[in-house]
Length: 116
Image (cartoon, rainbow, N blue to C red; front, side, top):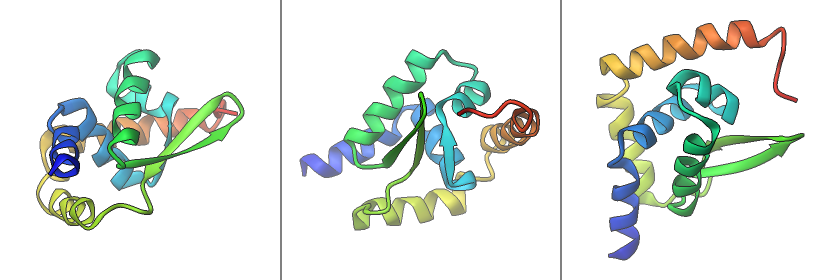
């Protein structure tokens, strides 16, 4: 029961939900990518990502000084089912669409100065 509550609680915050939707759409994102799209400081984004990591939603990979995040490859059945529901129902919300557009625009500018 505790795992289920923590899993659902992780999605109850709008910022964390936006992060999950962005990772679902893009695959892997650097903290700097999320900062640019969410327009939040690194400390806030990192705090939400740490919560998602503790809740088994994301995996982390270090590259230089930056941390890169993906949806967990070893998610539980509940997480996998919830991700399918999110893909069907939340990915077309105006906020999710705006976040994906902002990410696309940011990634185009990032080509010139990538996170290393």
